[in-house]
Every structure is written in C-alpha cells, then in structure tokens.
Length: 162
Image (cartoon, rainbow, N blue to C red; front, side, top):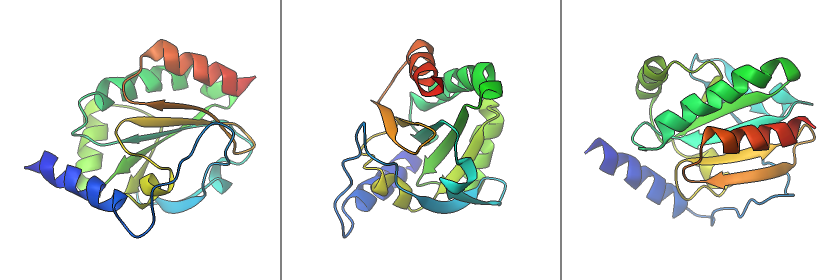
C-alpha cells in the first residue's frame, strides 16, 4: 500500500499543471528551496555555490536506491575533502519516513525533503533513482536514470572535480 501511495504521488506530480522539464547535460540546474531532513532551510544553488554537487532523487520504496545511496556515500567520503557535495532529495515522502530510512542505511551526506515532488518535477524526474552531476557553475555535466554502480558514480564525480 505504501508503494502504491508513493507511486501515485509521483504520477500525480508528473501530471500536474506543467509538463516535466527535460533537463539534460549542458543545462543549468534549476534552483529550489526546501528543508533538510533536520528541519534546516536549504536553498540550491546558494548553499552549494562554487562546489560540484551530485543531486540524487530517491524514495525508500525504490529497490535500487538503498544500495546506490550507500555507493554514493562511499564516493562522497573519498572526495568530500576535494569539495564534492551530495544532496539526496527524497521525492514524495514525509520527514518521519525519510529519517527512518537514512538512519537505517547510515549515509552522511545532506538529505532534503520534497514531499510533494515539486523539485523532482522541475528536474524532469520520471523514475527513481535519478542522479544529476552538477558542476561548480551550476551546469549539469552528467545524468544517470535508474540503477548504476559505484564505479559510475566515481567516474562522474571525478569529472566534476576536474
């Protein structure tokens, strides 16, 4: 039932008033404001200005998200001292659900809420997981839709850090 409710939120969000964006490599990443899972405000790109950022869209019902989020965490931990940032945006779930999942998988990067999937819609997310690799100037330099392994994340991260 939880899966059906989450899917309905994403489908309804995608069928909202405006069509989903077609965000691709070379495009400027859309700005947004939301809250972190800890309740603090988050403004993109202002809070990450001048830093390369991996923008990850996920949900706890996504069968690929858990392992990939842990793989992203490993890449982030290796490269955070070089300035790599990761923001994981939960699409369509409430804070309590997000907090429990993050505690369970133990990732250390920033987690943001997108309870109505508004940000996901602005980014053109049509399936989870979806990951964008945004350079320090705010330009999308890579995009992964669906399942990927740690080596793929590593390759994209290293490109951002050049």
